[in-house]
View (cartoon, rainbow over the protein chains, first blue to last red):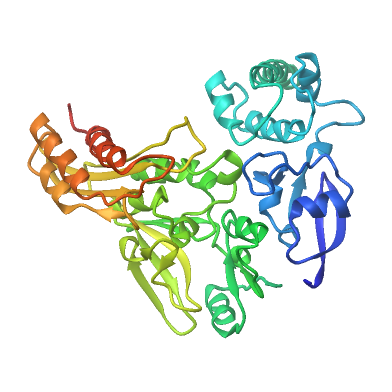
Amino acid sequence: MSNATLVSTTVNGDPVQFACPTDESLMTALRNRVGLTGVKEGCGTGDCGACSVTLDGSLVCSCLVLGVEAEGRKVTTVEGLSENGELHVLQQKFIDHAALQCGICTPGFLVAAKALLDRNPNPNETEIRYALAGNLCRCTGYDKIVHAVQDAAKDMRKNNKRSNKRG
Amino acid sequence: MRYATPASAKEAAGLLSKEKGAAFLLAGGTDLLVKLKMGMVEPDLVVDIKRIPKIDEIQTSAKGFTIGAAVSGAVIGEHKGLRAAWPGVVEAANLIGSDQIQGRATLAGNLCNASPAADSVPAMIVAGAKAVIVGPNKKRTVPVEKVVEGPGKTCLTKGEVIEAIVLPKPEPRTGDAYMRFIPRTEMDIAVVGVAISLKLERGVVKKAKVALGAVAPTAVVVPAAARALVGSKLDDASLEKLAAACSAACNPIDDKRGTVEYRTRVAGVLAKRAAKLAFQRAGGAL
């Protein structure tokens, strides 16, 4: 048994405290102690990307991070994408393009796609496919996901232009 | 499992050297956490070095670059100075895993994991990279090619920690390149990896270094391959000599990714391509 350690961190903008064994992954801590079950466990070894979150802005597999490493860091999960109960453009486009079936991989894809678009607002198809190569989908296939990301990127660029004009 | 976050490399070395049980160093964790999950390791102590000041930074000086042991692949890929100076090292580092892995994986970790197929290791070797190793009592600097001694085995003694990877400032008209072959487009382990750096003088190769990955228990430096390039403008005859020398240096395994014959042949083919890319990057005209 590992000793439980108290971890103070920020998750989706809110201060959060949880106690977890030192050998518990951030993925398990987020799911079982913080209640954020949008973080999915696929492989648990960093191959499938279903547990993707950002840690201080970097895209990571939360199964390859210890819960205790989150002390004082900023974590964002899929639950942090929507604002005021409104879906993020990416989430809406995944629905519009039917870019999901069973849904297990979807949160990871959304978090990874958001990380891509934050870095590169206008990626081409190849860039999207490479950026999402760490996320595995075993039912839909990738075309619809790529289309949803392209469409979301287009809308996000338009919205940015509009808010820049307003600003 | 106890978890420690020392404030200096020396403190980390002290903790690791004093531990009587199984102690492991944690940087990016992309290897350690997989081993933990698989039950391959049962640590009594994990020493997380990421709280050490500046260990997640790249320092640039007149002599070159000091890449802290916790600098991730993503940070390396975004560093303009490093990309301009050693594009081969950057491309090798960035070939490892997905964007998620890049968010955490480190050069020092790739080196310490000591996989024969580690992508960044041949690239670091030909760039003349050195590992700054801090022990409980002393500090030493070791060329990267001397760090790995066999699969999973390094020259680090109990308690020693790699604090940083140091890359020299490249001499003028130097170019480097790393290429690997994998059966997929990405997210796979190298079947063969080839790194080449070379320096030109009046359009002719003056100096060269060639290292192969995934074709022997450790990365292999191939002096005969470098000699094949020196004095040439990469004419066909020198490229053929380079390929033959690389193939001759192979001592690979047979596995599902590639047979011995295949790896041996591909090492030569990739070497020619990597040499051309390094040559162009050094400003040479093909």
